[in-house]
Length: 386
Image 1: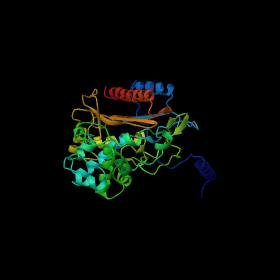
Image 2: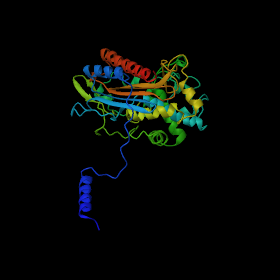
Image 3: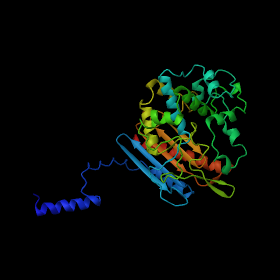
Image 4: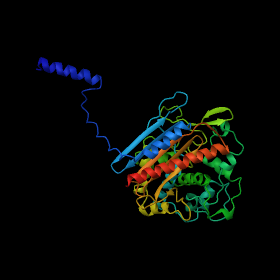
């Protein structure tokens, strides 16, 4: 029989349990070690400059062996002014292409596809409107040397933000637009960025797996790599953890959060977080997704700085190149840079100020933001290996 004191303590504990105390769960994990003093100074200075210049929000995560640092700045939404949170979601943009490339390399590892064999027959099956001027290979699509015209040169020609950005463009639709433009043989073999390459790759993946691309990426990459908040399709624009992006359409401010033209696009449609993106690149560069030989192939950039879905960044203090990608879609910028083995990483997502579309002055301003993001990330990684 319980004593009066025992009954009192039990009652007290039950009362505290309802208020959040006296839990019987495991103890809270110890906090991860903080970065060395000065490590994130360049990042913080850069982000504060962005905010002073009207940027809506920025999220950052820095990782190194044994630790990480995450921070959010600005607001999620200009309508509510809710503060941004470190695990808020944003469009990954061009970082999507690294994920699609990783799935292609899984198919190569499984001997379902070949990097350097002709894929003209498969391309004719998924996009019969395209008329290649010669042999086309997966490698050429992956590293943007196929010469395939960029569908966006046709789709956004003379358009206004309020219309085209909210019109869904499927991969098939995009390649039909690309087919209106000449595919010239003299462009083949040279780097010429074209989102059409990744629309074609998405269709080829679906053809090989006999499943929709979003399902394939969820099952093969996102879930196994712990990318719990990452999606390609199924927009949820009203979710509270979205960082909202904006553009100006004349005098009207347009919310382009998860814009229809991007939904499901293998060229830039992934919505993710800094933590999930770091999970992906660490898994890729450490050999968890594709075989080491194919990861080396991804890093081969020829005469430029773009490999098979990966950008190469300048040699850092470790004496090795760094890898990752940058992205730009209407209303947003993204950047992720990792050490050669994925051990040290910086990933950033940024919601731009509301700026006009196709305006040369705005384009230069966005380009400056993008270069400053990369510079700050590189300086931070240099600090991590000192």
